[in-house]
Image (cartoon, rainbow, N blue to C red; front, side, top):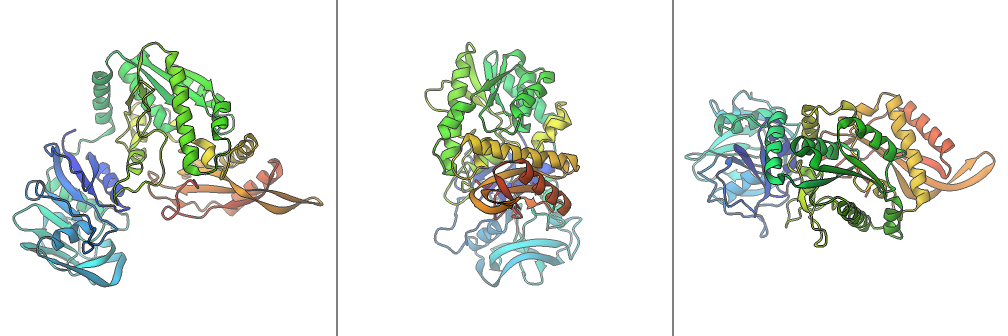
Length: 509
């Protein structure tokens, strides 16, 4: 890739939002931890320094060597990045009297500055910092202020280095996208060539060069990511792609059969493998979420190893890994702290002699859908809600049994079908049911019951990195609750999860 943007991650919860906003401008970018700056910067047109939970005044504050970057590439320093440049370049950063968090307005903007072209005074921005720049660094020119923050933005004379104390990547900064476009296109001269069509052409060519005439086995899940990966690989290598859809016993009700039917018209070579007993056996007695994920991941690998041996001369294992999987699974000292492990990230054990190919590894979920549309995949499949790789195992809190899976499959089916019937499915990013490890007292007829509790979860999001709970109609929730309790033996209470991400995650485990 050429015309890349390098984003150095200092640990901000917003770093991935920066990347998404850059991609929305049809510009390719990659995130690197602050202490792992690439040796070769020749492919990058500019650099963005992210925010951070650290204070630049702390002894353990991130302090990378930017000598290969400053003065050589255009730099946009955001929040911590702006304070970092000030603190280590002759300026002064001190604690704010009050934490500067939330909406603010640019009360002053310096005239004729390219960073603020087409941005007017009083533009709303989003602040999130407890320190403030009291004195600007050497050779700095103030570009903008708010009522409470004098040095809200500045640039360094003699360099294409810009710094802002607010976050342009969040939606609350109303002209944030314009500011990023000003920096990336007008100042840095980056071409806006990152499009779905360009990605397909480039990736198909790269896959053909990498794979040649070798055979590839791919695990299909029925979801968007693996389906797009399959069609992309099929376009590149045709009959040399062998797809396997595994029933891990943790799928939604009737999903194994319906997904196999769905793939019949896509021209893919697909084999269905029912390994549900094998997975349930591997999960027996496990309650810890990470242990369950690892058991499922290991069993997936074992199943694929067995099936791959049935195909002569297979060289590659393809996976539908996407960029958030990669970022969340990379743990460094501070940035990108691991939230959970992903069963399709991290390589293969030594006994499995297959190379890994991940054609979607650098895409966000919304980009995967756009690529799928470019490939002509049916919108019904592209619009399908995300479903976790470990399946219902991480929606059953505690240990896994066949009976618990049965209960949750029935509950989930009623909930999801209800969303479809009420024309709510496409208004929701992701929905599902969670079986809680508690029982509650109930009354059915004249009998006292002591049965399971289930939680319903529905969120709206763009890419799953942040999410808000969906305000579903009370009438829908009432009908769904009644239907579940009346039809699913073993459940006597239904609750609705109204937590957003952050602080909660979309899944409960």
